[in-house]
Image (cartoon, rainbow, N blue to C red; front, side):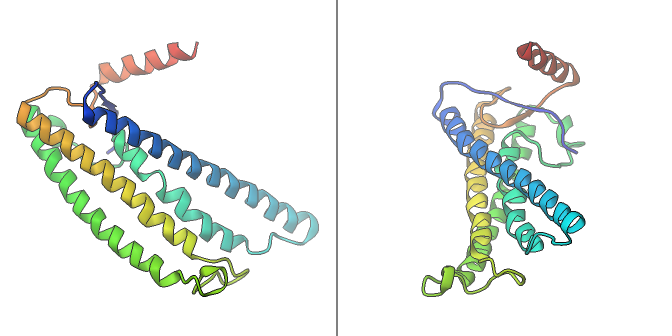
Length: 209
C-alpha cells in the first residue's frame, strides 16, 4: 500500500541535490497535469462535435495515444520522492534503524537496476522511430491523422532517466543512514505515524488560512 511519508532536509550536499532534482520533478509533474487537462478539453471538443454537429474531432484516438505517455510517465519520479508509489510496507513498516535502511537500500537498488534496463530498452524503441531524413523526423506515425510517434517515445527514457537519478539519491541517503545509524535521514521518504500524519495535515490546513 502507499502510506504517508515525509522527506527531511538539511544543508548537506545530498539534501541540496535532492531539492534541485525536485524542481525538475515538479516541472515534469506540471507538464503531465497540463496534458491531462488538455486531454479532457479534447474529449469535450470531440463529444460536442459528435453530438452537436455530427463531426467529432479528427484523430481523437491518435491524440490520446500521443498524450498518454506524458500523463502516465512524466510524474513517476515526483511520486517516488514522496514515497507515493504502491508498495507493500507491512514488513518494512515494522523495521527500525539500520535494518530498515538496509531493507530500503536493497529494494531501491533492485528498482534502479530495473529502470536502467528500461531506459536502455525505451531509448532503443525511440531510436527505431526517429530518423532526421524522414518527414517529421519519424519512421512511423499514428494510423488516423499521421501524428509522428517519436516524441511520445522519447518522453519515456527521459522520464525514466530522472527517476534513475532520484533512485541514486535515495540509495545515497539510505546507505549513509545505514552507515551512520541516522534516525531521520534526508532526501528519502520516511514513514509517518498516524499522529505525525494528523499533525502534518493540520499544519497544512492552517497554512491555507
